[in-house]
Image (tube, rainbow, N blue to C red; front, side, top):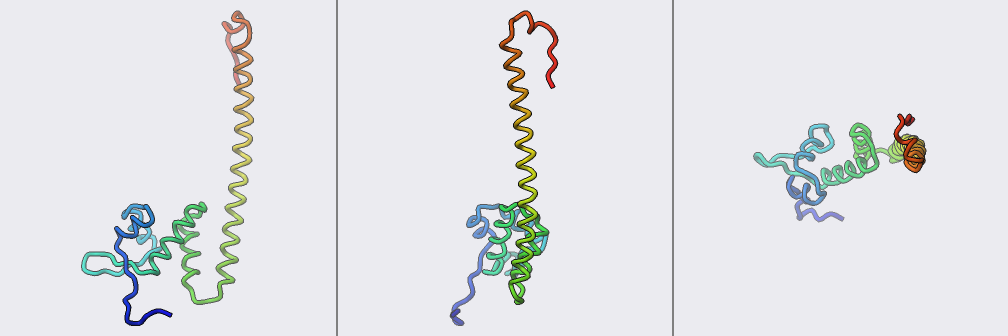
Length: 141
């Protein structure tokens, strides 16, 4: 149970930048896109525990490969007082789409690696051929 006499934790941009190993500029960018909404104390930004949590979720989403728009959607749902079922279903949908994209990329990478292996084998074969054959033009591809 929160202590009513104790002030809520507040963070500076420098403290958050150091904690999450990002630049203050990145934090300001997340503000610009609406992911963070610090208050002001004079010219200084003051971040709440809510902002810290939203930043943590934003960085987690980036590691998962989500777009800032997707992250904002999910983080905004996280803030809503409604049932978490909608948030979890949306998150599953986003994760499923990213899984599909990554699997496609993996397949594309495997195909490219196989092509590289073929070209390497062809080059090695040509290099191992008698010197007289190497003097002629070589078609690779």
